[in-house]
Amino acid sequence: MNCELCTATGGVVLWEDAQCRVVLADEAGYCGFCRVIWNTHVREMTDLDAADQTHCMKVVFTVERVLRKTLSPVKINLASLGNMVAHIHWHVIPRFADDPHFPLPVWGSVQRKAPERQIGTEAAMLARGIAAELKA
Amino acid sequence: MNCELCTATGGVVLWEDAQCRVVLADEAGYCGFCRVIWNTHVREMTDLDAADQTHCMKVVFTVERVLRKTLSPVKINLASLGNMVAHIHWHVIPRFADDPHFPLPVWGSVQRKAPERQIGTEAAMLARGIAAELKA
Image (cartoon, rainbow over all chains, first blue to last red; front, side, top):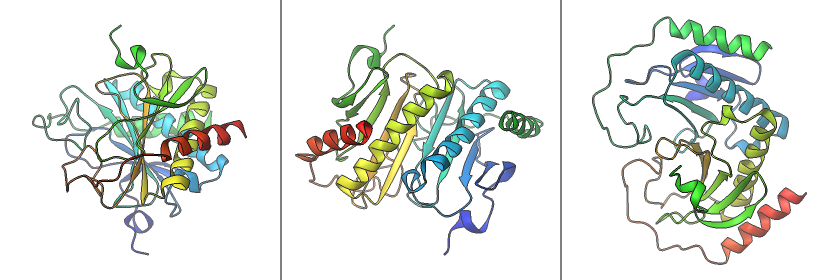
């Protein structure tokens, strides 16, 4: 199977367990854009059993919580689309008033130049925050 | 507060309980586009407690399951954005190869004219299917 999420991590791995991984995406203008990627090739959330659905969403909401604490975005956007890569991956996107598309979705038309902001030591803070919350 | 999801249903109500409602959205070219709207004005999923998060996602996944059974879409798209209306609402979108934006997100650039397809008796089938699954 030629699936890019089966053959590569999809970004810098911040956290992982047997079921899924959290990666920091490399999206220009989007500091802290994370993805929660299911490890096996599953197409839809309703192809997972209830326990796995719950686990997946627990990780998604943990990433949301840690992003809010660490970066104080104006809004969090959550999305599982998969029209091109039909392997469950959740976009967990901290949105800011000066990001390239706000208030449109990140898939909308560009509203302005990307801010200069870059992710630095926050990446390590996110990794530590996610690990701490999921251990608790 | 001037929130359109506090003052109106947001579409034809297919199902509701004390916490949330499922509505059929009126989006041109998108037959079966549903939204799960939390009834009270809550901004982010992590502002809900764990029981409410679980309930909300159970409803979202039920709508996904019923849409798959009823309409056989090529993919389901799930998203909670709220940049303009910061009141929890999940888009549950059945995608088809001939829909206006496929394979792009529905917020991307238009790829083609909307198909002639219209939702007819499927609306009642969706309502019955969701009620049956959530009663079980």
